[in-house]
Amino acid sequence: MGNALPGAQRKLVVLEQDPLTWRLEHVVDIRKRFIAEGWDPGVNRDQLSQLVQLVLPDPTHDVVEEVLWQRFFDAAHRIPEDAPNEVNIFEFFAGLAVVCLAAFEEKAAFAFDLFDFNGVGSLSYVECIVMLSTFLSGTICFVRRGASPSDEKLEAHVKHAYETIGKQPHERLTKEELLEYYGVRIIELCEARGMDECDTPMVFLLCYDLVNMSMLDDGPSTKAVVLNSEDIGFD
Image (cartoon, rainbow, N blue to C red):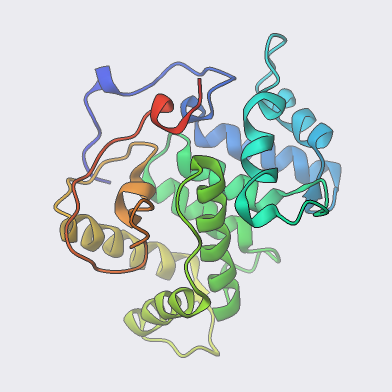
């Protein structure tokens, strides 16, 4: 979907220590490894390092230790200090999926699959809210910018999806319905902000504007700035 940035501006080389160069296929593979291990959703630092190293082995860097762990465990919503020494794996997958390399449609499909726990091909009203909340909070952890929207805003967004699709809250939304909805919604959000569509890793941030926290609103246009590793702090 949309227009990719010129090749010279896109990262095609995978750097194990830079999550912005990872592709969605790497995130999918890490998730498969997690499922195979049968661990609880709360994972510690060693478990997370093990998962990442299995997919993107790098003997010279431990990206979880050096970069990723502190973004999740030290995030503002992790306080008080006696919070469990673990991260929510779904939040981790969500944030990683947002910043990695893939087209928006592929990321949206991954988002759906991540929360289709029973594999039935549909999500309930509450599951849609949890999916959206987790992806926003995971993204905020990764980029260290913004704050989670209120429950009212989250529910209003999901309500808009249901109304647009033409279903009642007691019904479930299929994968096809949600992907079609977000395919149109992302165009609306881009146009409202005067942006060209793109399939860069930061498409989610550009459209939902984490800096000004207008993620779920059709607010006034803002100037789009394409973020890179240096902007977010992945060195």
